Length: 627
Image (cartoon, rainbow, N blue to C red; front, side, top):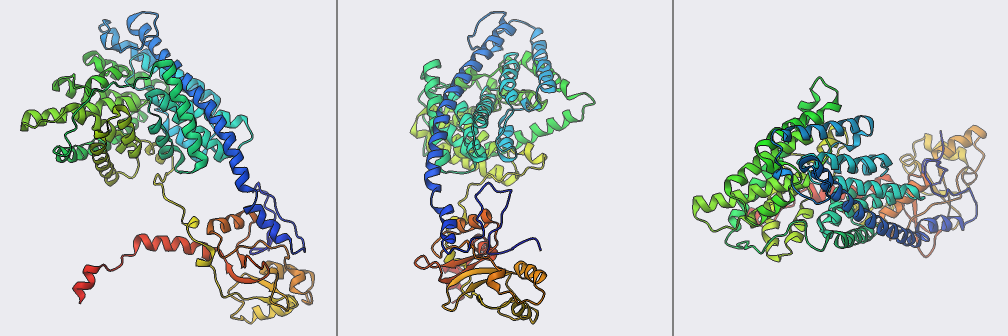
């Protein structure tokens, strides 16, 4: 036997927690319990304060990085398409280069391919899946070179006509900065995860001036938790980043949207239909993107050349439909303000999506949000215009464009709540909330029905990493020990010999044989220790006659739990001390044993939750029918 299985603590070098020593003093049990319940809240508050200060610094840094990347994209765009030395952010669509417009994206794609080949392959793609991967399996550690190469590669790809947004690279870069700050200090992986999420949220807030949506995005796509330890630093980082954005880039939104009539409640049936369309569009776009990636992987060429090949397809499309080139924030603004004709909306909807999947599927660097916003907004506007022309409705194309913009990406990423908030923050119009909520959740339901992964998690699923994105409370934090503990405790007198206990086990005593450990009590039924099967085996090896008492063979250093304690706390004691069962004692008298909590008691809480979700109970209608 390798050591005690239940009840008594044993050293575990893999756990960074203080381990109890074998001490016969009755006060030892209280000190072990205090280790879990006493100093932890104060320590947590102090650590949260430290993380919050670091989050503020990360937020400021992310705001500056967003501003720098925004200007770098403008510089490269002006040099590549207008041969001007200027940082002014402008669209490549007004260029007069003729057929050279096909060549410029190829040059940018080739440069990004070389950077990915010899720099870091993690700069490929839009960045958010890589941040998720770092959180889930990389202990929130991101290499410093990713923080440098990602924004530069994205600026080159976008500045040379790539149909991407700057927000994805900024989110990944902000997350990298947060991770690097976490690696500079002595921190846990959980604290580092919070800082990474703070950087990502700050990057989005600094790009779009949408701090609330940035916080929710970090919770839905990176943290998968809602706790004060993460929420407070997230809000601080997003607030500081947005303040930096206002100071450096002005107080306005990324998209200036004029007042629009959302037509509620008369237009709600058409919003329902739009929700179905958005859900199908989200599924189709995600499947098309990964299908294109699969086709590139079949090419008999080194993956260094893939971005250049994808850029060639982009250049050809951009030659005929110049609006697909570049970020396209101005085009999105025009769509939201109903400034484009139906024919142009259809062209943007189709060819922006096509240019995006070809370019991004080739493995280049760039953000996914802005191009999907443009394509889906064009779809929503064209949908409303088509109904107006065909059925004589009086729908506002700008309203349907805004709602579709949030719904398609929300459904594709399974971050629906984020993009309900995002679209609302863009307009600051409360009338947008009802259609946004309705269309977004319908689209999300459609996407959930047809796919088990999102556009963010499909890449990770292909690597064998399956992510559970649903947020749900831990049942162990809702059930107390008294609800699942065993009250039928088989105790043993501390004076019994090891030989006698071994004989009773050999005779399959029904009170003992089904247990792996037994509490020891004195003549007054007070708890004094615990003995396990492993203790008995070791005692018999030392004393084959079995004359040793079970108190001498067992452990007198106890880890206990209480009937009013949460199962989560009891489970932590089991993990920290590497034991499988805990005696349950009274709060008033720590020597009075009233129950026993084992692994089966922990699992009973899970079973209860499973039954609540799967077992159907007869309703009133059924009872009435039977009568």
